[in-house]
Each structure stands twice: as C-alpha cells, then as structure tokens.
Image 1 (cartoon, rainbow, N blue to C red):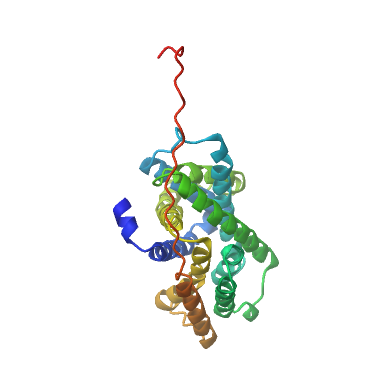
Image 2: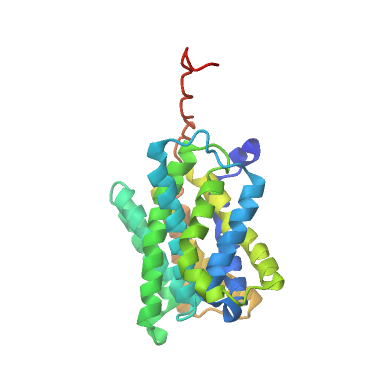
Length: 299
C-alpha cells in the first residue's frame, strides 16, 4: 500500500477524497428525515469508527502524552465538521454550505503561504466559489450560514492537525484513534436526535455511507497531506464546490449557468496552479521511545 500511495500524486488522492465526501454527503440526505442531521452525522461517524477499528489497530503503545491534545483535537474537529455540515445542508443549499465551509481551508492557504502568489490563488478560488454558488440568487438562512461557518473553523483545524497526526503515526492507525473520538464527541448532539429511530436498516445504510465518509476520504487526505503543503491542499479544496456542480449537471441534469461555468474555470485554474511548488518532503514517522527496563523490575 505504501508503494501504491507513493506513486499516486497527492493532488489525485485529494480529488478522489472530495468526490467521496460529496457523494457521501448527498446520499446522507436520505437518512436525515429519519435520524435528523445530527443523528445521521453521529451514526455515520460511529459506523466509520467501527470500520476503522476493524481495519487498523490504534497505535496506543506509541502514543505519547504530548500527542493527546493533537489526537483529541483532530477527533473533535472531525465531529464539528460532520455535524455542522449536515445541519447546514438542512437549511441552505449544499453548494452554498460547501462554499462557506471552504473559507476554512482558504484561510489556512492564505495564512500559511508565502509571497503574493499564495494570496492570489485563494482569492481566485474564492471568486470562483462565489460565482459557482450564486449566493445572491436566493434567501439565505442565517442559522444555516452559522452552522456552515462553524464547519469552516472545524475544517481549518482538521487540515492543520491531520498533517501533524499523519507525520507522527504511520499508516491509518491514527484514524482508528481520531474517528472514535469524533463519534464520542458527536454523541451528545446526535444520539438524542437519533434515539428511537435506529433500525437495522438505518445502521446498514449508515455503515455504507461511512465508507464514503469518513473512512475512505480521511485515509486519502491523510496520505495526501504527508506530501503536500497546507497552501496547495487548502487551495485545491476549492474544487469541491466545482465537483458538486459537475455531478449535479451529469447526474441530476442541473445545467450550470454561464456565471457558474466561469466560476468552475476559476477554481480549476486556482487548484491546478496550487500544485506548482505544493509538494513537501514526506516527513519520517518518529516512533515514541520505548520505556527503559529497570534492573530491579523483575524481568
């Protein structure tokens, strides 16, 4: 697996993750009338946690005390992203929610980049996002916007901490730590909404959705962030609203307007340009030192 992911460009891993997230989010709408947005997010995270625990063993033996804030922080950020995005989708269009949440990665790209170019690319992508979503064309629900803004904060923290966790732990074992934490963090909000409506059918559907999000995309993003800068990754995510527009045109026959096509071009150009110089040297995973055995320990 290490050889395969080493040969696949990090930008391609990121694009595949975005397709998986968008598809999983769209299909999650089918569970929301039964479980509610918070209940759907919690059950999906719970199923994802079980899947990851079956795939990988959490690296508890190499977990250091100073790693705990980063691991817990990543889990909480993941919960915030999942819960607030579905809550926003219940009130505002999916494309608008994605565009607002993209302000998180955009801010990361702008603050972490160097030089004028690092500011021009996110600004270009933001202009494209605005044209794609056309926020002026309809009523904006302030609570929905608020949920999406909270998701933007969670998304920004997720990007920063995912790279640190990916550099610290090898393989996908770290996700077997962070996704269960995310499920626990989402439980106080999602469990009350879902309780009494959980059936074997909803569990099966949630498990299938969990493969699309969080399992597959978070694995791909962790591998990608080991080999990309924050600026390249954050700007490339501007393509996520564009992917939504493309899928809408192909699957739902929702043809974009000329302004949306112009926005699509802007985000694609910004995302592609972000890849120039966006590689980072893959950081070696530093294992925690094993405890020394004392002479009187009886071993």
